[in-house]
Length: 91
Image (cartoon, rainbow, N blue to C red; front, side, top):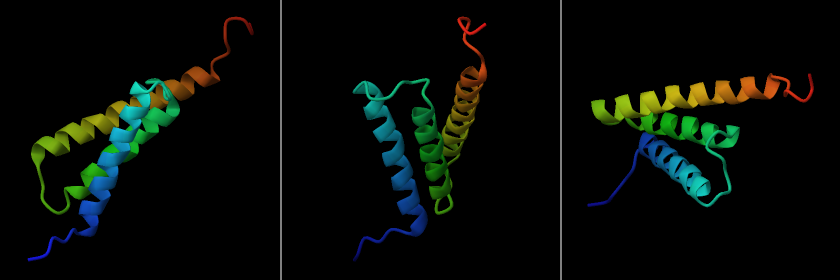
């Protein structure tokens, strides 16, 4: 009996690895929680986990990752808005 993974399982594993990598880099001080890279890693990772639900749906994971993605989009928008705003020193 072999152990085979479908394409969506691989996408889900890659998504999980992406989220964990971002979290590790945050804890290691290599990324900032409000940084664009960290938010993108979270968004892409959560999206990968959501894709994996094509094989076997799980409502709890769907809710968790869906909200995770919404929060990531909020963080990305907030980061991009703060970059466009002139700093108080510039006038």
